[in-house]
Length: 289
Image (cartoon, rainbow, N blue to C red; front, side, top):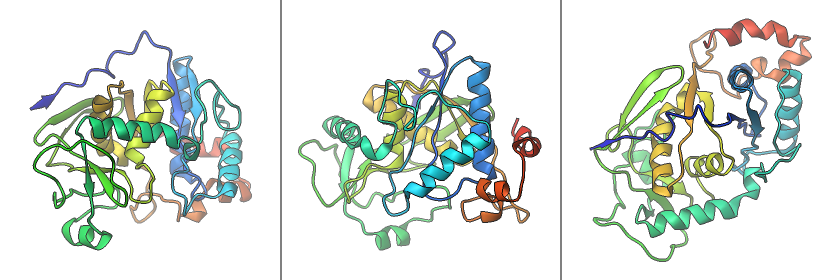
């Protein structure tokens, strides 16, 4: 089966709304900076609005001082946003930890539609059954997947997975990489949407927030291309539109590894302390197209 997802293809008549979506779990690095710079350039070119959303869903790693740092670093870089946790706006709150009721409502709608089932697999069980690359949760082997769709009252103490339509082709046009194609059940399996500690997954939260904040284009790193297919399926199940997509190439270190928050030497905070000027970073930004 082929999923014809055209909700994101013709948005020329809409006012452009892009977003910056950093997580306050460490200092932003040069790779983040390039992606966020590209998001601003595309918003400026479209004479649109840029939203900053604080994606602080990880309670163990999110810290207030990282939020303060990322706001300072983004402004040092020359970025400006018209809506956000620090400036307000019509679609707040712009901090994910304050939006739990929105995610809970979406979860209940998915459950009522027969899209979800509880998963009681332990982390050890999943580690033994899945071979997940660093930027993906891997393909779930279906250990807890029921034979038929389930509806009813939520169960506590379980992870909740989205039942992907096996064999369905999810296609979309990426603004940088061009046509993309993923097959549900082959390229990705049933994925988490709600954790047993009563927190939504990244996949669910961003779909809910992008729809609620009327985001028309998502600019982010290429490591999330496969996540786009999952999010298109979630958006369809929730009957909300999908945005357009623009994935940037990843910056890598001298060993060819993609930059991560552990690369302290290339954090914006460290570059600022070294006396670097934002203009000195532009050559690296332009390499992403």
